[in-house]
Image 1 (cartoon, rainbow, N blue to C red):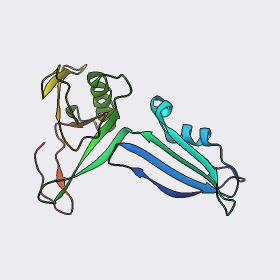
Image 2 (image 1 turned 90 degrees about the vertical axis):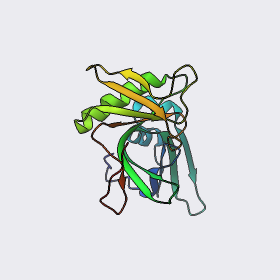
Image 3 (image 1 turned 180 degrees about the vertical axis):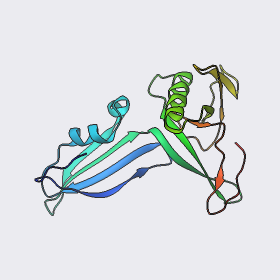
Length: 179
């Protein structure tokens, strides 16, 4: 977000949590417009779910802390039972209240393909509903099949999609695993 010469702020913290929610906390000597900041930080489709807190502390500093569900490209890390950390480039997409896994998977696959050039082909959710089998297939607009399966590491309420060419990579090591 562009800053004008009269408004400056300091970022206290920001990042993506293991729950799939982005957070950002900024402070300033002057009051901040939380809605303007949220519009610059969070995609339009998730702003209604955002949680925003505004306060002034005892040192007269103005704070804005916001949290919103992720919809975008991330490098996601997973720690396995051998205590090794593996990571993979993927699109993490919040399904939304009352949303459908298939709709979210298609949107995530489209974004993954747009940003990487690779076809989004693997998708994961925390729990696949009983109505559809594990490793259910979703047909993408180009005719490719997106397989959606269960993964304990997938945040609740999100679908994670990555391409067929993408592999898990051990952090700090050149070895790769399989999907």
